[in-house]
Image 1 (tube, rainbow, N blue to C red):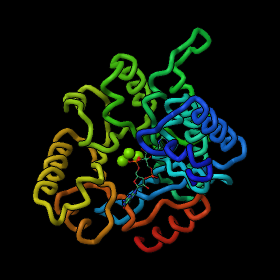
Image 2 (cartoon, rainbow, N blue to C red):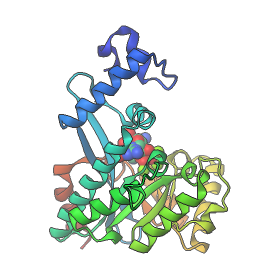
Image 3 (cartoon, rainbow, N blue to C red):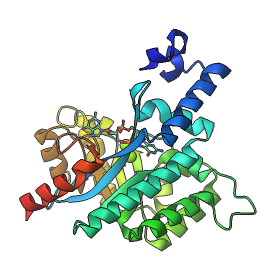
Length: 289
Ligand code: C2E
Ligand code: MG
Ligand code: MG
Ligand code: MG
């Protein structure tokens, strides 16, 4: 897809993005138009409880199906959206859409959580005089109010990096969310550079073990040791653990032995389009009842 932007713009989507002002504006225009034209969608990937086999949560994952560029993976446009600030309207839209969907599942008799990824930009917004609340709290509360979703069915995924900066405001936001009843999880756990001390200072409910530790868990004793240590620590801290990127029965068996609570990965399901979610939930509910 990047080629279609023109030969010289190829580097746009590489991590070493060579951003000329012109390139930058072009991508910003594309992404703004994508929002307006409904090219942005949410897909949902299930998390399964290893003890019961039941689906307990769906993670919302953003997708951009561009008429001009084809499917643009989130890893290619989220960093740009963060830098340009477009992640703020996009992030608010993701919260609204995910909460509305989860409310539909609940109404259909399938009350499961929805997990939404937050970017650090959403925490580090300036709170202006017009805002009684931090803009992120506004976005979360608006999404809950508009949908009628019980706050306990919303989980917010943050990364360790978010906890490293602006500690006071981040702490305040997370404490308010916790009071409301929203769950907080640490995504990509184990890949950040932060100290573990944040685990006792912040109101965290869940650790999501990064898929880089899960990949070779059946072959690499070091990965097995790391995952084992994380689950033991989590249990003592009364945190739950999700393993990401589970692709095989063998990995699942190891994770069960290591007392991991939940699993997510292609082995159970790829991220599903909105319309596929209820059929999937009904089918798996029937299979485990
Ligand atoms: P993440 O939150 O860690 O999401 C997990 C990623 O792993 C997803 O990639 C998912 O499709 C992929 N995945 C799931 N199971 C497997 C598996 O078994 N094997 C492998 N190899 N991969 C698996 P995706 O959808 O491309 O998203 C990439 C990242 O983009 C996400 O990582 C998240 O950091 C970010 N992202 C996605 N949606 C949003 C959003 O709405 N807002 C923000 N701020 N970031 C988002
Ligand atoms: Mg995530
Ligand atoms: Mg992750
Ligand atoms: Mg990630």
